[in-house]
Every structure is written in C-alpha cells, then in structure tokens.
Image (cartoon, rainbow, N blue to C red; front, side):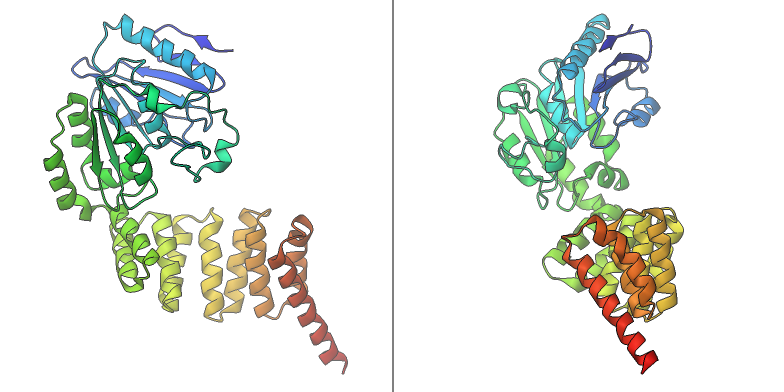
Length: 392
C-alpha cells in the first residue's frame, strides 16, 4: 500500500512501484522534478549534480521498469504536487533520460512545469503503438499501457527541450514529439542513446540543464557548442565508430573506437567493442592486449574473459583460451553462450572429453539449440576418432 510522508523528511512517498525523495536546495533556483532511467532503482536522476549546485529537486525513482504506468505513480505525482503547493508553487522543470524522459513529458502538465528537458525520450515504449519501439519489448510485456497517450497528455504551455541522436533509433520518437507545440529539438549526431554521458564528457551538460531551467536555451549557440566540444567525449567517438561499422567503413570504425578508448580508458564496453573490431580486422595480438586490459578493469564480469578466450583461440594459444573461458563460465555458470566458448576452446585444444562434459549441461538446458548440438556432435566425433587411433 502506498504511504504519504511529511514534506519535512527526505522521503515523501513510497509504494511498490515508485519512491519519491526530496532535496530542498538553497532556494536560488527553480525546482527540478526528475524521473529515473531504465534499470536505475536506487538513486534519483542527477541527484548528486543538483545537490552539488544547491538546486531543489524532487526525484521519482522507479522500483521497476514500468514507464510510469502503474496507478501508484499517479499517487506519487499527487504527493509531489502537494509538496510544490506547500512550497509556494516554485517554477518547475521536469527532467529525465529515456524512460525518465518519457515520464518528464507525461507528467509535466500535472506538475505545472514551465520547462521540460528530455534526453533521448520515448514517445511510447509500447511496441503496439507508433513508432513501434521494440528495444524494450521484454519489459513492455509486464506493463499495462493505460496512461501513455502523450498526444493528449503533453503540456501545451511548457517549453519542451528534446536532446537526441538523429542517427539512432531515437529519431522516430523525436519526430513524434516535434509535432507538439513549443517543442525544441536539439539533435546531437552520434551522441548515442545514453546521451547524458556524452554531454557530460563533452562538458556541455551543466550549461544545458541550467539554460533549460531558465527557459533561455540558445539553440544556434547550443548547436555550435556541440560541434565544437563533442570531440572531447569518448562516447561520441564510440557511437561514431559503431555507426561507421554499420556502414561498412572498418578503418574509420577502428580509428574511432581507438580514440574512444584513449579518451575513456576505464570504459569496459569501449574496450570490448574495440577489441572485437581489432579481431575482425585480423589485428589479433593487439586485440589480445585490449581484451586483457578489459579483464583487468572488470575481472568479475564474464564478457572480457569471453573475448579474451576467442582471441587466444585465434592466436592458437589453446591453454590460455581454455583458462580464459573457464574464468568467464565460473562467473556465470548458467550461460549457454559461455559454455559454447569453453567447448570450442577445449575442442581446439584436443581436450574432447572435457569438451563433452562442458557442453552437455547446455544441451540438456536447451535441447533445441542447434549450436549446442553441433558442438556436442563435433566433440563426440573427435573423441571417437581419437579412441580409434589409440586402439588401431
């Protein structure tokens, strides 16, 4: 059951679907109401940033990826509105990214927001409605989309700023928002979906947020800043590298991914995609170096060990390939993919008995998986051939 709490305490609302916390700020700024992003269930969107700058903020934190649809979310919005009333109706900006950007748009009218800042938002996450978004189809199966009609819900009076990457799958959503009055599109090519990270790395996020809060964002100036500063962002180069690969420009892709990892050497995802690109370009020794660096950065995640095993196998360093695959599988024993990587390494190392033992659980768990059956048959045939050689 939902519970309303006094505005004097940090937590002002709680339900199984959403939690609401308040940071009073220093009274010099408008109030920002934020909506959390996908898979972020423990902290408010931008909470450290707003606390640092003394901005009063109210954070709606989703307890699961519900795109702000459950009835208790409306109760949470009512609780936030009561806090705003108690505070003398300060100017309000709603703010969020992706799922949070959708929430910022959906509830701006209810909260009397003057401004809305959305980073790569969805017009709808429901695959059954335009623009027929499929990226979160698994999450959408859990959601009863009864409160997501933005065409009727959007505030006609609020100034809406929408930052997005027109080269990404967010472009159709931006086109839907563009039909709404007082919507300003701020395209950032190769900013990616997690565009807040790109803007932060480029040194642009602070100015963007405060300009949007004031409703005074200079669009031509913003575009010039993006063109000037985007090269400082590792994520910009990463997204450009992925796009170059999609357009079959491997040399450009490799250059961009190299630049991304140089600018953001702690980003494991950048390291992994760069290493796989190197492997594809047959720069095997260098790919081993980068995969090894990724295992050092994130030794408790299986993905770097998976890549290192594949690269070592291409090097024909079979013992090291097996060891890396074993490390990865030990971190995620239920993964069929990691079992296949280990089985492949064991077969090429000539350890066919162990290969059969490794792939058998995957065959039993996924009897219809053709890759599992193929590796099982290959290991068994190799083992039988070896036995014939021994006995002949």
